[in-house]
Image (cartoon, rainbow, N blue to C red; front, side, top):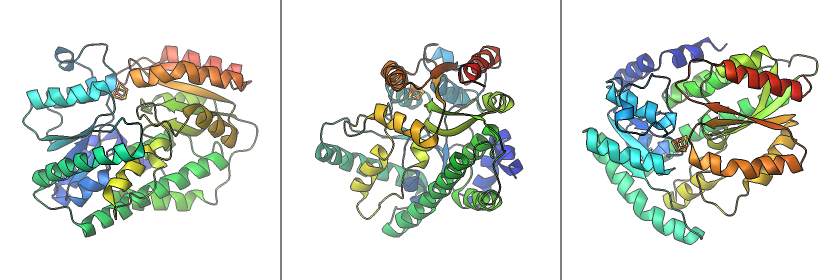
Length: 370
Ligand code: SF4
């Protein structure tokens, strides 16, 4: 049922090269996160999401401090070590200072085109729209020069539909997991999500449809199981999920930037692109990287735990990620007020030894009564 997804995740480079040849489209590497990939698709590109990888770092440390997050360092390593030859251009967002600087490093070191969706930090929705208007014009021109094709109303509409449909299917998968804890193993679930970073939409959508067909009438395992939610930026390294599976801890929902925070987004409204992208970026899930005074992360997380019937929260912290670190103490305090247990694990995407994490997970299981 999950073999095809695991195959993609285990052979990312081969997968992207294969579909690049098949589609004859330039590959645009999307640096995390929230770049509306519909625009790349509408311009005739093949968007591939780069959320970091587990390559050992040999070259990137010459350009980025070792106290930069492993997301940025491992992505840079990909290009520096010549393993990103199938990527033709890069699309960044201004999600954090590290990513903003990373684009400048790419501009200095490589000749591949880069563009940036600069995200507004403003007090009002109107100011946000004004800022986004000019950003989107630049992004559109940049994409069109990469692909040599124009973004039209029709191509945008089609792209919005196909990407919106992906997220709709992913939301159904999340719902099945919430309603039937243990039915989908943690490692399988996040392999399915991760495969979506690299596959063309139509291919991925067909795979998701057939997976959901097999899951809709399946039953959850019986007996009391420990249910948790995890929160953070990047849901890797996925090897950790095999430990959670081993201890029969079921993740029943998540608050990950490349998980639910992305999958929860509705179809991009392209009839008014500025409005559509503003809504797409800031809704519905709040994020530590997006300034949005209208969305309170604390209440949001507590509600999420209650709705999923989770026993606790696991903070999945990518080392040195400042936006995530700044929010965590207040989130932990709020969970405490609500008597919701939590713990934290520190992640490096390049890590190979998971012993300390396993100890922490096992301790959390005992804390939750497992
Ligand atoms: S993990 Fe944090 S610091 Fe690193 S790129 Fe993502 S948001 Fe920025």
